[in-house]
Image (cartoon, rainbow, N blue to C red; front, side, top):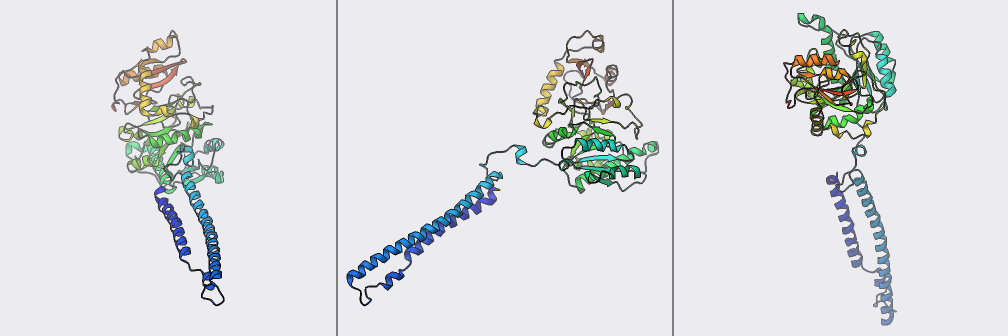
Length: 452
């Protein structure tokens, strides 16, 4: 802004000086009307009278010029003050390099982060929407967009009943999708992938938002759900080693998380989904190659992840209540219905979250994990270990990981070699009140996609 305004400021100052120089020059050169009328050549004027009259006229002219000059100076002073005031305004707007630096919160309006609810034929979407609206701090900062597939009239009526509290859009293509014969029973997964692609294109390309939090219609959100995403939004935007923020902990069941550490956040290499934020830039990267089906597992492939991580919480900020769906309740009865939903409001936007920066986080994480003593599952289950940990249980093969995970009660599946909630191969959880790291040997360098 300073570059644009500087010529105007210089021009104003130049006009101010030039105008006063011209004014003085004109006034000094101006002939005296009164002196001409009192000329000594005029009959009846004597030499002494003419001299006295001329001197008086000169004095009068000097006084008149002085008064005019003073009035003009006053006028120019006002102009100069206006220039100074404009300069101050430009400084306050941050357009001048000498202006006092401002914090991010002072320097910009709050980012608008829409919530995209993916809906189909569940009238229980009401539970999801009720909690979103109950905990939403601002409709302007967090507009809700419900994208509905399936053409289910009763679900449509439920969504429409919220009126102006949300925006209701409908996926127009309800046709069946041609699928390979062996995938005939997976038709629903193909439709979900098609719906996601259409809905995300609407958010980013039609509504022109720069980021979005995706929520499915069977999720209930925690009281600090919005606070969580608002605090992590600038971190996601600025850190190229991150590609998403998720509200979900795959191993977040009661007894496996620390209820006293509701503010604890992690980096994870596993894409969690279930309430997650992405940016428009990421969508521009993914959309051209978006898969026909099984989009979430596709996201977990190395070609998409590209060694980037997500942020996840110790205690989940979403809870799924949808046992029925295309997944036919996979994992629901054993794991998902026991996930602990956070109930304590954490003021994340007032906290220092710089510990999540990759270099700082990796140094601290590896030091804590690999300085922990190695123990066995039997040691943990015997009750003979003292203290709250941390303790390390080590694995070196996919089969060993699965066996240990089952014995410890955490999810045992691997996607492209990455364990659920894992970071650098390490899964963090509580077992009998003790912090445990299920970890590969020290010196781990990369995932093996064949571990799936």
